[in-house]
Length: 112
Image (cartoon, rainbow, N blue to C red; front, side, top):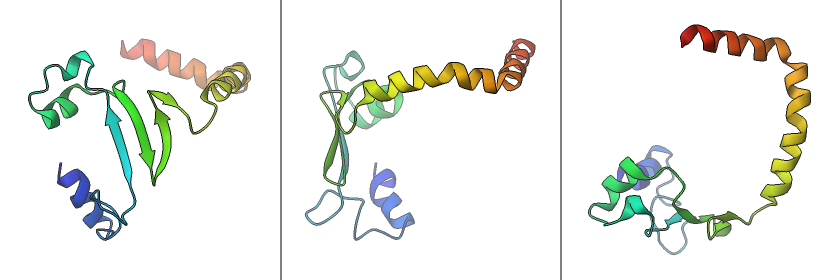
């Protein structure tokens, strides 16, 4: 855990700005819902986090003091609108890049 926090800050030459939760430092933090099955019972939080957490237990994300995710839902922007726009764009993208998509499918069949 120290490697991922203070160690990362030191590697970025920013140990006075990040790497610890202290007054005056930039704060990026993720809070997890510990009621999820893979967190029960909590025996070794670091081990369970590394081995079991896949992101679906994220409850709150705060980046530089700004809440981006709250209660497991993105609140920083309208995610539903972005997903809807992406769904509309995919057919045109597939048509425009049809040869590439065909190649990917061909390679996938060859590998399997």
